[in-house]
Length: 170
Image (cartoon, rainbow, N blue to C red; front, side, top):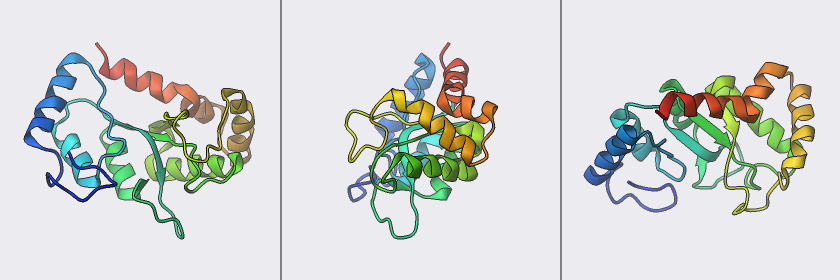
């Protein structure tokens, strides 16, 4: 399917891509729409019988233009289909761990707290703001400072991902 950072080639998900999504569903493989264009993601959601993820992404905001940033419509579509969005701790919209905490809150406002997780791709990260899992304690405090309760924090820091995997992997 088409990716976010290149001009469209397929107009979304290709016919072969549709077959791959169906086979992933049959095998219990979670489909990841990270890097997929909005059109590709919408096609994946149409074809998939299981929830999908965006394993690492950030929500766009004023003053931050980058093709990898997601729109609220993109995030809401995955969330409304029971999927999950991984908050990506990268220096596109976040310049610090505190900014990343704010990014997570923005994602929970767009998708709901049960549809957000800590994103993947920590090792290939551009200007990382979460460089060690030891920082999760600090992140927990930042999320608490934003008004997120203990249950919501627990879900974002692993519970939501575990729930999705239980629902999709036989």
